[in-house]
Amino acid sequence: MKTLIICEKDPAAEKFAEFLNADPRNGFWESPDYYIVAARGHLIGTTLKGLRGWNLPIFGFRWYVPKSSLEKLELIRQLYTNSSNVLIATDWDREGEVIGERIVAYLTGKLNKYCLPDRIYFSALTKTEVLRALNNVMCMNETLLAQGHARNYADTVIGLNLTKLLTKIYKIDLGYNELSQALSMGRVQSPVLSYIIKSTSVRFRLDSKIENFEHETVRTFIHTDECDIEVEGVTIPQDVSEVELEGYEDEEFEQEQAVHLPNTDDAFWEIHLDPHITMEIMESLYLRGFITYPRTRSTSAPDYVLKELEDTLRQYDLLQSPNFTHSNVVSGTSEAGKLPLLPTPEGIKAYADGLLSKRDLVVFTWLLARVNKAFAPPLKIKRKYAIIKYNLQGNQFTEKIAWGEDIENPDDVVGGVLLSTLPEVQPGKYPIVRIKIKKKTADVTGGSKNEFYRLDDKDIVSWMSLEKLGTEATRQIYAPLLRERKYIDEANLPTQVGEVVSKLITKIGLDTTLTVEMESRIENVSSLSDLSGFTQWVNDVTTELINRVQNVDVSEIDVFKCPKGHKAQLVNRFWNGKQVLLLKCGVCNKLYPI
Image (cartoon, rainbow, N blue to C red; front, side, top):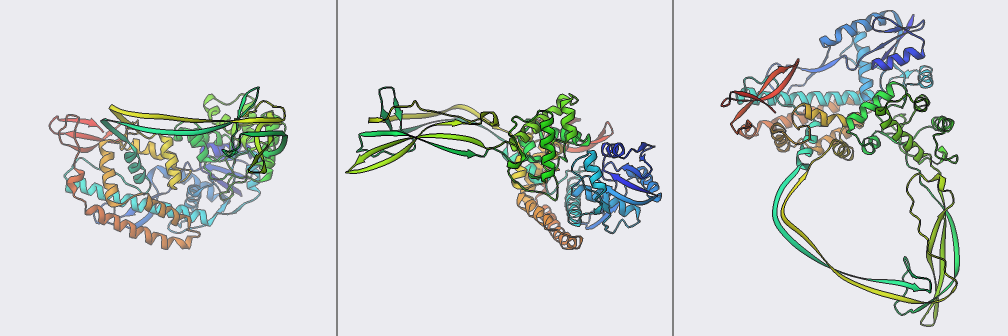
């Protein structure tokens, strides 16, 4: 019988089929030894028992099969029945573990229990990596799986309970009868929304001020016939009026210029695109086998990976200098065996053959430049010092003054280096000249002025990374998600709905402190047996948040206005097959977009 390989996405399954010489069938691929099928994301959903009622909180967490998944799961079941074993080959992260494990739990009829199926791990969709993984089948990583389940539980229980409570408040307490789904709240989404709104600054000023400053500096020069040379980095006492330039001395040293290998956060920060677009491009490159897995915190890689990368770059003349070597790569951190963001040999060949689109090149050329910086050898610098002597109160002192620098390996420079060299002066005695500089400055500001500041998506992702909110796999989705839910507009400015939800978030304390604590607790989940303690903590937090929401004066969140200033209500309507949120004004008898 054959082995069933379950991938996460169709392009990944297609790559496996290519490497294993499998032929396409109706919804899957087949070779003499393998069936290959794509899950297409989460096939098993999460919900809470009792959501139809209004008694909160609800803790009846359960897994269920959505109607949209039935056809795919039936196909996988048929393949499973005709297979001797199953291998999970989903993405290497928490989400990938849960996707694969839940499918196996469903196939074995144990959806309400956990399992640890056979798993293969790979950091790039290349033939070398995939075949290596197939020769190294292992049990699924229990820690990663348990953390994925912990995160799912927290997102489901907190998110659905708070969303259900808001629906009740608007629909039952405030009479928003045409509202079927109210405003959503979540453990990561809500603090992000609050940060966006707090950081959006708009104000008008009609003031002015004048600030006066006085500056006094003394600059010291060695006076020669050729020029006056400023003495920097050395203090020559005020009583000294003459120095003797005895000669020059050279010093050679190396200066490291290599940087760590790039990861997801580096890509978000350094590539000048909205992060969700950057991730779209990286995901596409990964699924074609051109870069390693794009959701990673790692900044270090095994030596054999670096050697292969260096050899491939050298083969296509993509290293800036023949002296570049991976031996000087700055050591970084590693995440559960994941590689940093790296171009694969297949990706480098595709680039050299001109097969990448301009959209691909935005990311791929950045990656090539970043790897060049990581492989850069140290700079060999020769620094010249002038040796000067002077007498003070009968004692002789010797000082070294930096006179100039030169780089002996300029072809190896990967960044900017500023060199300055003073003209060479013959040894001898020279007078000291001191210039005292005094000046006053006035900083005048004021008049009629508006001040405006807003965050772009990169600012939001950078803040989330600093605050340790979300993961490198999800941070780029929150700004688009908040736009989709009409909490912010296309310019990331808050809408009426966003401002109301933000005020509520602040009142109940659903802030970064709580979210960071939750992420820390998720990180500390090391086995499936740890989940019971974590879920109890989530239940306690949810209960407290619900109590706080119920203590809020509902009039504070019943504040919506139409564009003409009339009181309005939130309503749901279906538009192009999707449920959308609108404002309904009884006075205007019109519906308005949020």
